[in-house]
Length: 421
Ligand code: AMP
Ligand code: GLY
Image 1 (tube, protein in one colour):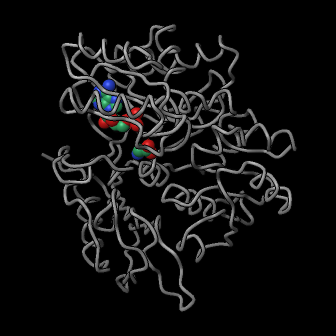
Image 2 (image 1 turned 30 degrees about the vertical axis):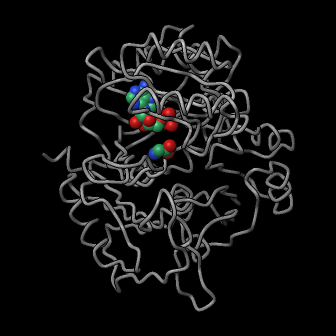
Image 3 (image 1 turned 60 degrees about the vertical axis):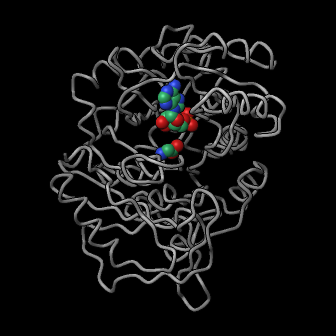
């Protein structure tokens, strides 16, 4: 079949690699893609905020299957529009995508179905929000209701900062319409894990638990980012805990969605905090995590594209998936300055030899006319290694990272280190 991949990050390059390895896939187009994807396949420009242009491209190219990477087109209803044109697509529809598109919707949903999460309240007016802040005795988290490019969650260090952010969100100054409704919730202490499932109605299968490293600096310091590295499987989620997550979070979520008349098809990525009172939902994402995808897809022994296709055609067989008995680690190479201001257009030099267990995933790169790759974003590359265990995988990923050069190269040296200690 002919596949169209929507998106331009490491997640989408990883999906492209899976497509290129799939016996089901004859050809692939990526839109808009990145430098590495342009070397691997044909890329076409598309505005991911413009659902019509995505649907037009799918029609023009007569593709058989569309895989949508990022949340924005999903929340804008690209799946509904593709389906209306009888084009098969992988991802949840607009109604289901509200699980990521609206924090207020999600908190209401979690409360209604008694799914464990942080205590919270919703506000649209300044005074009640500030009054709530006054009576909160413990640390809080402020969240914009809508999508805010991964920046909509603020963990204030003091009351003044909290007041400032509440004010700027509600006035629309900080995140426009997305911030005019906010959730203020209790700060959860614990260890985070990323749980990915592929769901088709109430049928689902779980991918190995993974752990992302969100902060820019080592030992989880500094600003929040899109994710600086990940590994899987993550042992913080023991088999017993996974079972608890299945029974206490995943199954009531899928059952609740059904009761709400929402038929969920696609990946659901659940951000979990493992607290001393058990696992709690931090957030839902209606797509694969980035960089989690870069470690999850290589751990699947069976064809991940077949899995996505079966999910989209209502034929998901949760028992048909097999995993490799290995560990995977991805180290994100960024441009120094990210997640704030960073340079672009630097020439990237790669080592001459790429070992068999290394996947070089492109994110913020472009391909120059001379065939050289240039930096073109904050997160530039993701170096993924597979190994017999995390220690070997991390070692191999770092050996490769050391040989990648451009003037502003920056990466965390401690991906997976907590697990290895
Ligand atoms: P989100 O955009 O919802 O993924 O939130 C970004 C990050 O903020 C999460 O990965 C957590 O590290 C942190 N976070 C969000 N909500 C909470 C919470 N209630 N307690 C502690 N940390 C949180
Ligand atoms: N790894 C974080 C995210 O994809 O949202």
